[in-house]
Length: 153
Image (cartoon, rainbow, N blue to C red):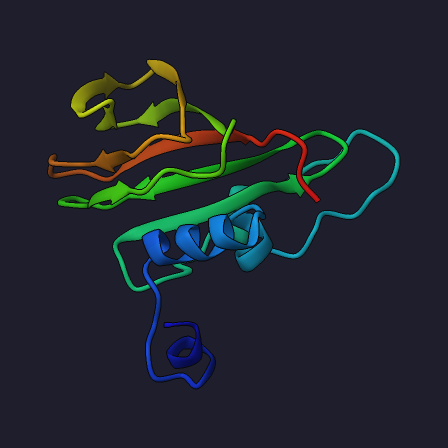
């Protein structure tokens, strides 16, 4: 698969990018965003300027704060278009995800069960187990996904 992507013969899905990132022991944002500039705080970001469709599936990703080893996390804005369904393999041991729905509604798969989340609701779960996201509604669902990584290079 890596060879096909490198040769431009295949376009990965977000799930494939996650598998590759997990295999290399790194964050998803490492593949889709340049690191944020280090410097004095505050650091301002605008999702509209970094939002993109990094893969072939129906998800838009805005890496608001790409992975920073000093902080141990990355913060992504995810837009799941209507009908989007993705089941993810387990991430690296100790990875924890925090999902907060900003607009619309979506379901999160945790320990084999889909859990509905509406606007303003949030969940934190161990992402080192299989999990997933889906939007079975007619409108896009927008959420923040803060992903905490244990010690990572």
